[in-house]
Amino acid sequence: MTDTTLPTTWPAMSIADAHAALTAPGMPGEMEEVLIHGVKTRVWKNLPPSLRSVVEAGRAHGEKVFLVYEDERVTFEAFHRAVAALAIQLAADGVGKGDRVAVIMRNLPEWPVAFYAAVSLGAIVTPLNAWWTGEELEYGLTDSGTKVVLVDNERFERLREHLPNCPDLEKIYVSRAREDIAHPLVTKLETVIGAPPSWGSLADQALPDVDIQPDDDATIFYTSGTTGRPKGALATHRGVNSNIMAAVVIGARAFLRRGETPPQPDPAAPQSAALLSVPFFHATGCIAILNPSLAGGAKLVMMHKWDVVRAFELIERERVTLAGGVPTIAWQLIEHPLREKYDLSSLQSVSYGGAPSAPELVRKIKETFPKSSPGNGWGMTETCATVTNHGAEDYANRPDSCGPAVPVSDLEIRDAADGVTVLGPNQVGELWARGPQVVKLYWNKPEATVQTFVDGWVRTGDLARVDEEGFCFIIDRAKDMLIRGGENIYCIEVENILYDHPAVMDAAVVGIPHRTLGEEPGAVVTLKQGASATEAELRAHVAEHLAAFKVPVQVKFWHETLPRNANGKILKNELKKLFADLG
Image (tube, rainbow, N blue to C red; front, top):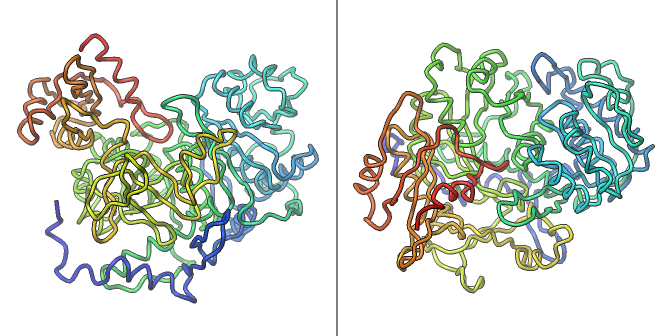
């Protein structure tokens, strides 16, 4: 589908020429080549050298509001004072370079304070999934060898009985504890930094002096663990910070593509504000949103939990300019019947990633929020979030793509069988990616590391194609591709047809075992509020558009948002259980 409303002069510049102009010598996005783990790698020359330097840069935004949570508001200056106070305390606790410090909280103002205080000391911060059970949290703490953990009250209660099984743990800071906790390792976090509204009155102190280099270890983010035990992806300061410059360059690219000069930063312009609907403990929330926001002076508006009406209220109250997260959230913002009761005119972008999105969503965003530009991208925990990015006219013109690679990164499509043969434009194979944001290894997983990371490349497990201009099209997860009687079925193709049905809000296609055919497709759908559709109607809808072997043999209805992991990916293994009695 191509957007016929695009001007005939568009694009005024190719992607390659736009990237060349934006990364030329003397430009903010200038690149250079360095050796990373023995591999020559393009990097951003003007990137902040460490996450510690991002903390210092953030302080320059002074009394602007940085964090909003319910009725709590924290300025950039107050945030810096809290980070410095906690870093000084952690240093006194013996935390230093290479020590693992875990953060286990819901999205609270204390989360980024804990993250930056530890990483500014050269510690390796390990954000653990706040949705995990106590047993899963125990695994994350023991696998990483965590020395100090900063945790909110709810997660502490979940973890309490597992603490005897975490021998490396020396100190626990609990935030928002409802009562005194009688445990020898526990200290209330408020005794160190106080509550968020009081952070501005903390002493003006410098961060402890620590030498941190760009390729020093910074974070361990655990993969979602949809199969087997989660794996800890070890990233560097350069890898995490690469998203900062990628965001700057990508934003400017759209102007060059339409023949315009990118605007210069204007200190007097209204502050950008993002409605945070994804967790900090995921690479998207921390690396792609939190870190660039601290560096660039954007406001982050946090929600206790996702609620679309509450989101409308916050967009109106805080003049939010960026919303989204995953496609389902974008659909809810569009489809909710109370939307027109709120002033959402501040929205400039509705962006998402982490899950495939229907091409129809691009048109609906522009139709519903005329001043807002849709955007998406592709990345993974192993790439510190962003590898490709898509927006503006490019997204309208290629709504089924996730965009081209950012200038410091490369994509290749390789034969999935041998992992070596590089395929040509528009051929479907396994997606490989490389760049400075690719993580070093899987923590304590040498075999998985060797299988996944090869000479600076990461083999993603995604099936994809790349067209002649470098735009990437994710076809499916390799392990989710169905083979029905020798015929390949790409789930995303069937899902996009289901999304085109006016009653469908959410859709997933999974494999149903079959004695003779191997697998058959089954679909699970969530209908839009107030809409109705039958199984026969949806099967007929798919049959109108796709070959008969691709039509789901069964359609099950799910009466809430489909289950997803922290990355936004649908938990298809859970949905397969709905069809366990078939086959």
